Length: 146
Image 1: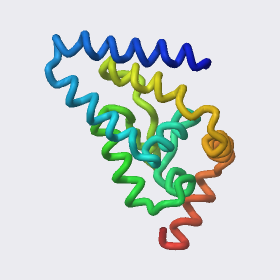
Image 2 (image 1 turned 90 degrees about the vertical axis):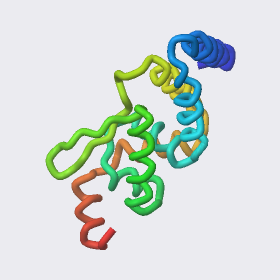
Image 3 (image 1 turned 120 degrees about the vertical axis):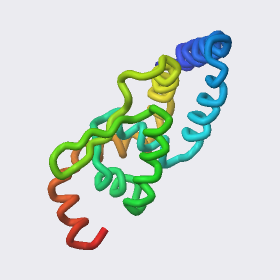
Image 4 (image 1 turned 30 degrees about the vertical axis):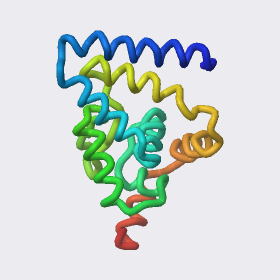
């Protein structure tokens, strides 16, 4: 998306939030919380990776090169903010971006989805996450005590 289109989407988001403040006095606090969450590099990367596919904690820990408890804390905060969902699936819990919930979350995710798409690190990470085999990765992590 071109910079002008991103600016239009960002402006629409700001306008939407301003108009909704009349209906929901807590919206400013919720939006401030979400923007604060997005100020963390690892949480932004988690969102960008979840744009590609649903992921388990093992996959995200591997991609971010951080310990699983740290990933779990990031996921907990994103889930509490309504940005991601968790769904148990056999041995794993799959995390995905929210597809429902409040309209301002959808708008924020729309804007975030346009951010960083030109970043080389994000491009490489998006390609790598698609090649990960969670069966091998999670089994290897358990063997190594991760």
